[in-house]
Image (cartoon, helix red, strand yellow):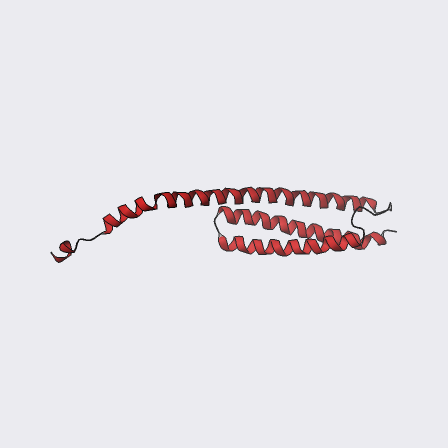
Amino acid sequence: MDSPALPSAIAVEQQIALLQRLAASLRDSQTALLRMNLRDLEEHTGLQNALCGELKAWDKASRRTHGIGTQPEYPGRQRWDDLQERLNAALEQVRYLNKVYAALLRRAQRSVQIMDNLLRNSSGSYIGRGAELCRVDSNEVRS
């Protein structure tokens, strides 16, 4: 009686593994962002896109087969409930990490905007002073 749930249980285990990989990549992206490591940030963004694509494919397939939570009572029901708990925990972790990552990205964007505004508003004063300091009088060169 446990065998009808087995393919679904395997699929849920695979989805949990994908979510855990996504969570790890989100954590690594946060570290790359804080360290300003663009190469790692781009690498993890690509990995996240691939993992999300796999999760979307799994979601479509599970909807066609009536999805998780539709299993009848059977002797292995406790295993199914444990899988459901692990899946929910993995989903919650990814949601939380997405919120943290989004906040870090907003903060980085604000910092870039501040620096851009500073450079735009004070570029004339810095260039003017620097140009005077670097200017060489042709009469001084001849002596």
